[in-house]
Length: 216
Image (cartoon, rainbow, N blue to C red; front, side):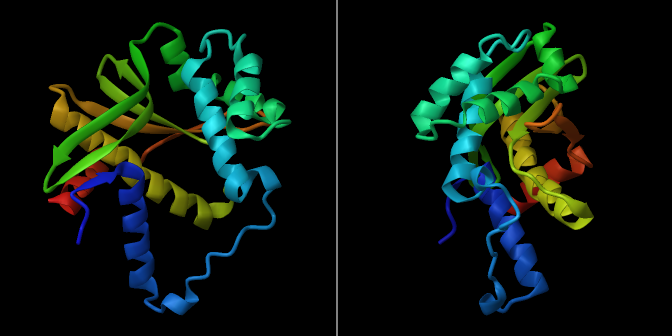
C-alpha cells in the first residue's frame, strides 16, 4: 500500500510520524494541539496561505533590489484570499533577500527558482518543488524558504530534523537526474521583524544517504 511516488514534504512527514510512533505508540495521545501563542496568520489556513504568498512573491521578485516586492505581495494576498496581509508578506519576503545564499544568487550565481524535480530513487519516485537552486563553484545548493516560527532547542531540533529529510529528498532526486553533485541544503527562515536566518542542513551527505535507504 506504499505510494510509488511521493513528495519530499510527505516523505519528511512519514519519517516524523515513524519517529513519534517509536517514542509512543498510543494513537490516543497524538493530540497535536494548535499553538495558541502563534499569531493568527501563522495558524491553520492563514499559516498555509501566508506561506504560499511569500513563496509566490519570492518566485518572481527582483532579488537584487526587491523593488517589486510590495506590488507582488498585494497580488499574492489577493490570490490567496488574505487581503490586508500584504505588509506582512512583503516583510517576510524582503527578509529573505538578506540571506547570504540569496545574495549569492542576486550577485550573479547561476540559479533557478520554483524548480520542479521528479526522479526515481530506489523503489519510489521523489518529487517536489525547490524554492531556489544555486550553483556554487563546489556544486549545487538547495534553498528552502520557511515562514513558520519555532522556538527553544527541542522545537528547533524537531523542525530542522523534519526539513533535513525534505531537502535531502530533493538532493537525492537531483543527483539521480544530473551528473553534478548537490553539496548542501539551506533553510532560510523568513522574519517579518528583521533579516532572515540562514540554517545549513546538518550532515548533508549523511542525510541524502538516509533518504536513499528509506526509499530503497
